[in-house]
Image (cartoon, rainbow, N blue to C red):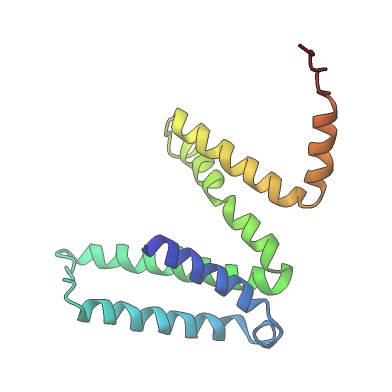
Length: 157
């Protein structure tokens, strides 16, 4: 349920930022308000009985800070900039390709192994992005493909 809700709110955000009123709003302003809303939701969840376990060592605070700044804030600001400059659809398409980049760097930089599961996932992502980018042209391509295999004549009994 949380994944569906997250995907829905992300889709609404991508389309909403591309609207005329928010398109003229500075990126840092939009990011600030979205982060404020996320903070309020975080504390609401804590108020519902969720336990918060604080780091036991001082260096873990640095890890948390780096994780929050690099992977959340910078990524979010860049996504907002991309939406404002190139639009919702190209930004969403590039965002879908993020796992491909992650697997590439995981293999080349961190020495991870490529599994069958990774290959299947990459294939699904690339096929989905190709279908989205092809858009209206996909129907003409499918019709051409279908014409390569004409119907066989039926035998009459």
